[in-house]
Length: 167
Image (cartoon, rainbow, N blue to C red; front, top):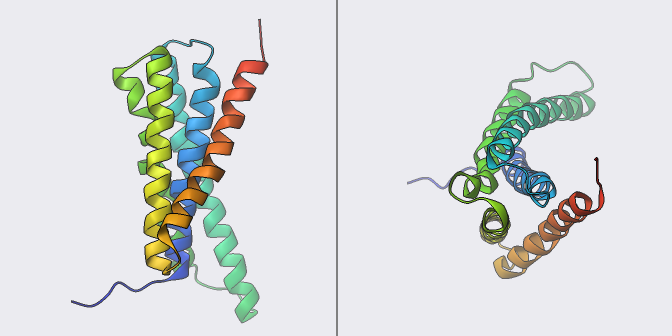
């Protein structure tokens, strides 16, 4: 069996897509869930956010990769590599985005909020560990770094949700 080709484009898009999706989705959901919003609204908000942001991230991945390729070769490129990276970004973002949404299917209020945060932090820990293993760079350190940085972004969502009042 051949080892998987480790293309930095795909690795970058998978890591970025999963991390950004987990952190931004749980940050958004936490920010609105602290206000005791009905769980159906949280589910709708999360789903709309995930799909729109996944598409936006895919477009951003495509445009940036295509621009980088054109910069390197000093001419227009066909974009097939950029399209592949965009697809990887989209799929990674969508799949990971539903991790923080999942608890709200079964739990509401504080249990849903805390479960969403815990599940997202666990997913970030696993992502950091896998990234470290693939990169051959201290997987436990990568895991802790991913949880710490992602946890800070989640905290921002919660703090904004608690401090901003409309009505």
